[in-house]
Length: 220
Image (cartoon, rainbow, N blue to C red; front, top):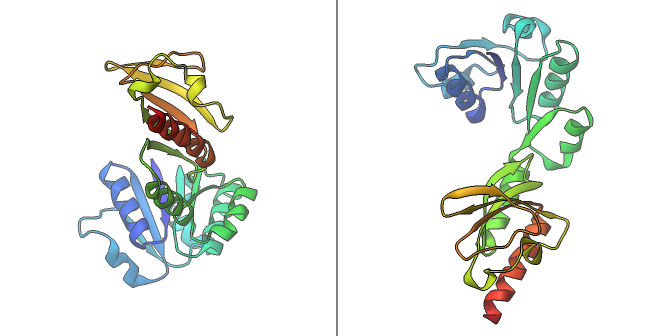
């Protein structure tokens, strides 16, 4: 895979190094020479000093034959413009951008650019960890709008159905692991003590499920 990383801060340098260690052809661009000090000494990819808004720089980086571009500077406007150019002018198959300010994230989404908002995602994860731990997040989709949670089923829920536990539309059953073996679940599946139920849910959906679990434990 031919990859171009725009921005050699901590994220860009780590991403470039990880890709290079996996055997990919990596070029990294930054207009501040000192930024390349973030790269490990054994980084073997291409290093290009200059502005990614300059198409000559992008061409020297190999954008004409690029498979993926990641714009990960701390400047949202730069990330957006470079991603848009890569997507529309050079038709790069996979373009990913870092979003720094959540208030401008919608602009990336407007142009249908895959975006990772570390601020939005980090804020939601911290908020989740401040709540009770009846449900553990095991997978995050997008920037945390939907996550997959694992719920340990207590004894008081044995014999009840999945639908009894998750009646809301913002929480959907996926699978149950029972005695080490997983199978798909739906709202009619009967629960057993010791089951691990995986659900896909929004933050509001998992909070409703948590409250139902907490209420049942208080009543037990």
